[in-house]
Image (cartoon, rainbow, N blue to C red):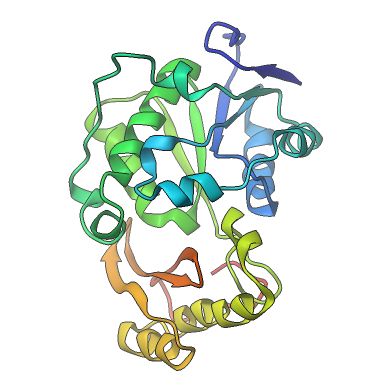
Length: 261
């Protein structure tokens, strides 16, 4: 496996299909699911590992985001990743950087209402990654449903030559959606956080809110939105950790703990 720390070091072969799994590191089985979905359809599989500072509206959240590159590299190599692109913030945003992608449409409401500038950062870094790596296909997780909708919109609106593919949310045995932030939950907070997947199981906005309130969780939002189809989305803080989750309302079959919806 090749590790490229700068754009100049990234010399990818241009034969066959180049695939990209963008990550911010702190890899977990949710990322493993992305690698396993991507590997069979790629001649060259690239994973980016970059904690993107411009998509954080909270400096404390950025500082607390877990980082363990050695572990990430070991996991990625074990899953057949060919290249890790792990640039510095200075490489991605050099002095004088002043061009941003500011999405509207799918980016409005929900996360944008609580994390100002978040999707500006996401859209900008993903467009940069698409231009630097030039993948034919990029894989993202359904847990970040609004992000997926924003990136599909970006690709469509700006005529970017990459196909966005989506992998179902991966859940732990207690139903909690896998997230790098879960490691920051205490045992008691983890128990409270289990109310989030239980709320989504109701498939109903009012009932979901009631489940969260019974667990003592005051959500940032509980809402049904059109995110590539009707989706019940939740964001809530449990202790100091902010968690998001969602379920697509394409059918009425509830998901069970440990399964994807």
